[in-house]
Image 1 (cartoon, rainbow, N blue to C red):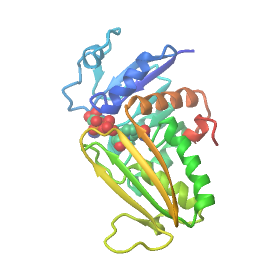
Image 2: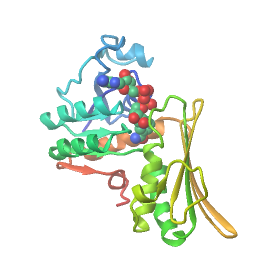
Image 3: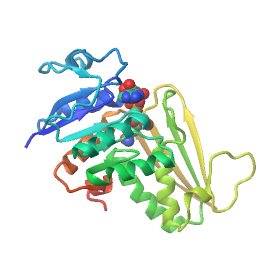
Amino acid sequence: MTLRVAVTGAGGRMGRAVAQAVLSDVNATLVSVCARQSSDLVGQSVASVLGTDIADLRIGGTLDLNNVDVVIDFTLPESSLAYAQQCAVAGVPIVMGTTGFTDEQRATLDECLGSVASCRAANFSTGVNLAYRLLELSAKVLGDADIEIHEAHHKHKIDAPSGTALAMGDAIAQTMGADLSQVARYDRASSREPGTIGFSVTRAGDIVGEHTVLFASEGERLEVTHKASSRSAFATGALRAAHFIADKPANSYTMADVLGLS
Ligand code: NAD
């Protein structure tokens, strides 16, 4: 069955990458695309914005859920919350890649998505989701090493550290029986405290996304690194998640579920 997909954030880097991924998928159809209401893109044809030759489809200023099997959303926390509420009311599954939610926003999201199938991930790339497993294994064996997480992204990224870096820290902390909020160190102006996980951040140029986790002990160190060279890695992962959740019962699915890693 062809999956009918709605994409939000048509003006955004990820919105465009996801729309392109849907257009390249013979088992999916792009049926609805929207941008923020005040955007110049509203009313323009998707073909002209994406530079592709597709049947005429106009960019809307609101999310149209008619004949939609699944929504894929990568926008901002405020708009993602509104889209999630709309999907919950209409019973339409949603894949959400937006990061930077506050704890309060995340709790609202959890509550409102209780009635539909959803998949949220700070990183939809296959490599990063596999890396979480490698990090759990590394933390199990090297839990007493000094652990540092470094991430680098383009200069336009709003939140820091990245949702992926935090998810990596969380996977490691949980494996060690610790609470990330207690062991994370985001600013270090003095010497290293044992048992902590240090975070450092680079924001520069057009870096798509790089994460390195360092486990350093006396005499040796292990580094687990993932580098994304194109947003298509996230877009195809999100589309894979969309295919996975479209006919599933209401639940909050993870990329580990989608990739068969759970
Ligand atoms: P971007 O700034 O290029 O795009 C954001 C989009 O949100 C724009 O199209 C903007 O118009 C839209 N938007 C803003 N306010 C809106 C509103 N009120 N209503 C509707 N739309 C609105 O950012 P991006 O690089 O595309 O990233 C978007 C989000 O996805 C960020 O949170 C980023 O961290 C996250 N991201 C996640 C992954 C992942 O794999 N989970 C990968 C890359 C980026």
